[in-house]
Length: 213
Ligand code: PRP
View 1 (cartoon, rainbow, N blue to C red):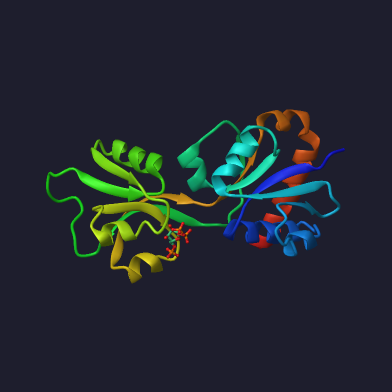
View 2: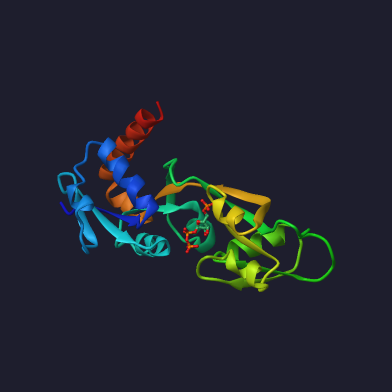
């Protein structure tokens, strides 16, 4: 039987996911010593981890080349897609927020505001819910720079500890939504490999509740 393939978001979520696999009793030696390899066996080889960028986790799971994926709710909200979101893994906790210069009142004045963000769909949906027209500019990283350079009035971004905002003279204007890592499953795999996937999900649930104790 070929291994179940699970796409993992590289970086912070990867570390937490490896921690979860270890709590499930799976040997993660290959993931700890991966070098430049991108596809790695987990445990007895019945699971294979695929390391990729967040948005690609969704692409690989949607297309069925990976059966499962671990990805932040931020990425799911921005890219959406067709898959099952089956579990909140509880780690990778942060939030989406609207933030801006701490000495300015964002909502004052009638001029259309400019928002910089890595998440244009999330930003547009947030302002649509307020029936507010804004100009959204996509930035690839360190979005905090945009208001500092005078490109935008505010940003929509992920806030975890709040230190990046604080150290750059910015503050949260409004919280948008909480974020954490989610387990997603390809819709066909859920039917075709139901038993294996359900077994993996129960192991995960058991490990997560053990961790929570
Ligand atoms: C994220 C986010 C903020 C920072 C928030 O960036 O875009 O910049 O983390 O974390 P904090 O509230 O704990 O300071 P990331 O580190 O992923 O880098 P990037 O902006 O280059 O994508």
